[in-house]
Image (tube, rainbow, N blue to C red; front, top):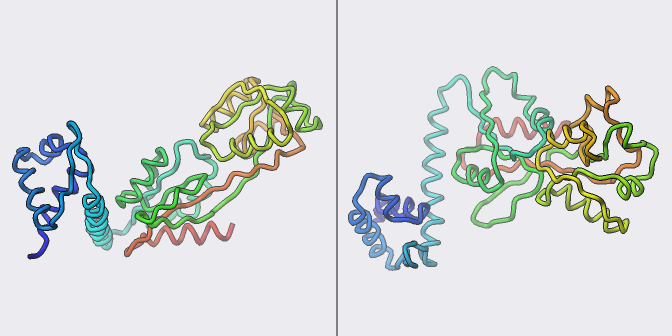
Length: 292
């Protein structure tokens, strides 16, 4: 007997919601009717797909395997519709996701090769790593920009492209930072503004201060580069940022950079998913970034 894909779609919806009542309301079905559909799928597959713990439904091992296949089946269908719908359009959409805390200067530089193309419409969304990778997996995004590699997952065939790297500097107001002062002395004597613990730059900085046997006075931990720039301008402390973030302030002399660099670099990645019908604009962007 062939598989009933209506049953599979109902299972898929419940598995992602984790709640039979909520899914039934969303699909405008009675809870009993939805239960019957899933029961018929379980009978066809010969395995229980859910187990109930209290009020929550949890996938069994067979349910997890079924969900993985259902994700692939329905994502392929969405991909087909999106590809064929776009075939006759004069402008093709490119959906890009970027970490909410990612450097705007990097994003602009990476996207610049296609921003003026009359045949391309760029849709840019920001979010957390989990939100962005989920968007990639459901084909709502074509490409995700991050400053650390996503965890390897055999169920999500990510393709990770290393597209850029920028040096990190220590900057502050002229009254606080003497550019010729050794880095170790600055970190020992001045308060510092740092990225949060989730940032790869922060991990490298913590390793640096451990090697130097320094315990810096951390005055602020910030996950937004624009806010770090503002705090440095307000003379709250010395900020660990890429010089490009404060290029206007460095040019005007409002901020200065220590001559001795911390030897820390931030790496940027473009993450895509293996697809049967990839968006051709993604390839154009990756080729352009390789030339820089």
